[in-house]
Length: 310
Ligand code: ATP
Image (cartoon, rainbow, N blue to C red):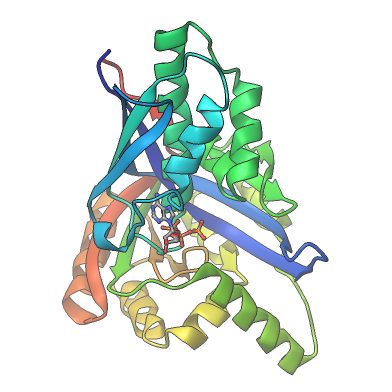
């Protein structure tokens, strides 16, 4: 059987409200996710050997920072799909990274979602047993907070720890410039910094997504959307990585309608009026900011994880 490839798309949080820390160690979130047309390619190949994942390799953007053992989310995703069914194949997994690692764009989650779809397809062909969408979603929830969204894509509101999803029928194309940093930020450390800042300030106020939600549902233009973008993790990401302030300033003065930290950072996303402005903003940021590894343009919404037709 030939290899099966699936694409996993990056996400940006158009709004990210972080509530108090829950007893289970997660924060209560109210977020609006949008998938972007920046992706990783995950290829699953049936090979000879005992059932399960035999080997995982990674190439592409920031590949040296990605684990190649069982701690890789794509490996765990494939194992969940293969489960302990009889007659399952051994597989090799190869990931071609296009999403920055530890960049606040859910790269690992996107790989997990793509691995779920590709492994399910391998299993269907080899054993004739398919996985239902409900089973894949259940695996996605078990793998991590952002995996259900990266499986489904589009524009969705996420509550709980981000895994309870509600589709937002907002299909208007949004144009982004993205600035990828040389160094990543640890998501748990950004949350811990937010908690510490809130103790210092004596409050746990969380951002409100309702105005943005209404604007998206009304198909509002980018000028109306821009002032409604928000991210409670922006301040702690800036505390940990102060150079982000200059990147945001340069992008906004180069013509972006708004600059935000993407998720837990340090990637910065700039909402622009159109594709031409997005290219100009990316060029200005790349030229002026030395912490930047590279810039890219992207549009959203993009689909969820999907098989590449063979
Ligand atoms: P999020 O936005 O979901 O908080 P992120 O985009 O900031 O995540 P990831 O790129 O998912 O961060 O990487 C976070 C950590 O997860 C990495 O430092 C790496 O050790 C680990 N990891 C596990 N699997 C993968 C993978 N397939 N790709 C990238 N990192 C992975």
